[in-house]
Amino acid sequence: MLPLSLDSLELADPSDAHALDTTQAAVRGIAAIIARTFSLPVPRQVTVFVYDGRRAFEQGLIYDARVSPVLAAKLSDFAIGVGAQGQVLLNADVSDWTSRERLRLIAHELTHVSQIELAGGEGRGEQWLAEGMAEWIAFATLERLGLDSVNRRRQSATSGVRHHATLLRGGLDLEAHGTPRAFTAWHLREGTRATYQLTFLLADFLITRKGLDRMKAYFTSFRGSLDRQVNFQRAFGGTIAAFETDVLAALSATTDPTLAGAPTVTAPPPRSEPSAP
Ligand SMILES: [Zn+2]
Image 1 (cartoon, rainbow, N blue to C red):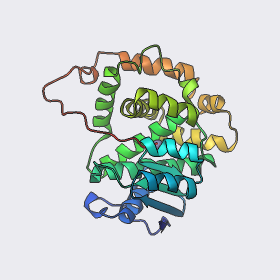
Image 2 (cartoon, rainbow, N blue to C red):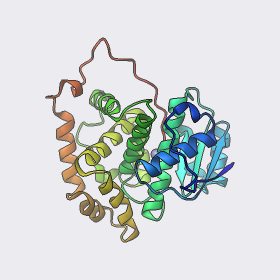
Image 3 (cartoon, rainbow, N blue to C red):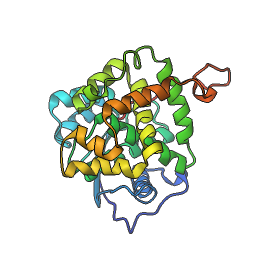
Image 4 (cartoon, protein in one colour):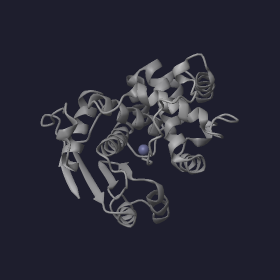
């Protein structure tokens, strides 16, 4: 357990990923990027729990994050990190715990911590949008550190989603996948990789067209009302159903050859992407 004080006056915005070589340095550095570059709220105190293996992670979810035993068993099966109110829980026992992947995971979970600060509680907002924004901020953070880019992620995610056999078939039915429970069922059915690629693209569509401030306003609106439909419409100027139609049209458009998903000999093999709910 690592209680970290994240007083914004003390946070130094890192320019070099090599400086983030411990969990403490990584969390503090990424919190600084999230707070300064993206103006997202980070609580003054964040407790970071690092567990050694799936079993310890499951116990931690129950006793440290007060997740129900049933949900903890399910989460620990596929998740390697969880962001809760003022807490980040990480399962460090993963096979591809590369530096880049570790930093992506921390940025993803810290974004969830920030969303909870904005919304005034956990589990508010469309879960696919919470996941997508966490992925978007994570890749924007990696871009800031010179380790990846939002555009590269956009291209690989578009290709991945188009090549997935069932994800786009018959529509997305986003309204039915909005709660954490429904999203988890969807994610387990379609697979982590494709589902998280899709959530990134959903958030990217809104952030590039409406701006990150609208996204923040969406989560903040849950302080005033828990009506997900109305909050979405107010923040983004259209219904979830209309948004889904627009996104599907963009995803099926084949005019941009870089997004068409045609296999090329220069394409790198798919990287493994552990989930980060
Ligand atoms: Zn997540």
